[in-house]
Amino acid sequence: MQKRQKLDYSIPSTEELINLKETALLFKSNLFKLQIDELLREVTPAAIPGPADEQDRKISAPLDKYLRDLKEDIEGMEPSTYVLKPRSMVLDTVPVPFTKPFTFNIKSPSRVTVVGSYLLRTVSKPITNVDIALEFPSDSLLNKDYLNFRYLSKRAALVETVMRSLKKHPSKKYSTKNAKIEVGYFMQDRLKPIIILRPKTAVSGSTGGKLAGQLPKRFARFEIRIFPSIALSIFPLRKLLPPRNCARSYVAAAALKNNNKNKMMMNTSSSSSSSSSSSSPFRHFKSYSFHQIYSIIMS
Image: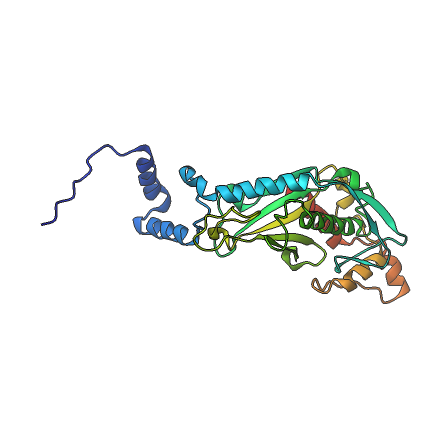
């Protein structure tokens, strides 16, 4: 005969009391709370414990260490110079607005920060990624780079430089053998390239970490997205207000012609309309600048 299970008549703990109050006051139904708990178990990756599971943070320790090493490697990249040639494209998608060759220095990012859902431990399936924001060094930008898409071309140059630096890292953690690095596009916008890093994982049965840059198999579907951003003090916000014009008509038309994904339209059919469009505001470019500014503020 099976032994009877002993009933627990002890006083409820603090956590149990909180759960009971949440069920009565917040969920209003025991069935609804059970459904929410089941949903969270289904969408939460096993490799990333929830914010309340402090004792299980060692599960994500290999990825945390990988991110710390990646931060140090990006901050330690050597300064370099980049030449923007006229009538060319950076990363084959971002047009160069300069009429003469322009050379500028690219230094290591002034700030590398993990942002988004991973920092809050709210990553959910099926999209499992880690977002990292790189603050553009102020020395690499001019106070007039908000005009004529100059910032977008320099932003793409920073993406290309960081990606090249990671591929040539002496530790070979980001080489083709240990990782896959490619250019992606934020919200499918080809004017806003980002870096997508997919570390290779160890084979089944291995604990990972034996080879440079390898992670355990439970992180197989994780990817790291690296976003460039700028500080709030780079550009004066009054220059980015809706009534202001930040793109000349000929520059805007060339950028729109090369950006097939956005399908934006601009009227340059006659000389009168061309002269009027040179003073009309071009809001798409300013929205890019605003997005880059507030992406680092919200981190």
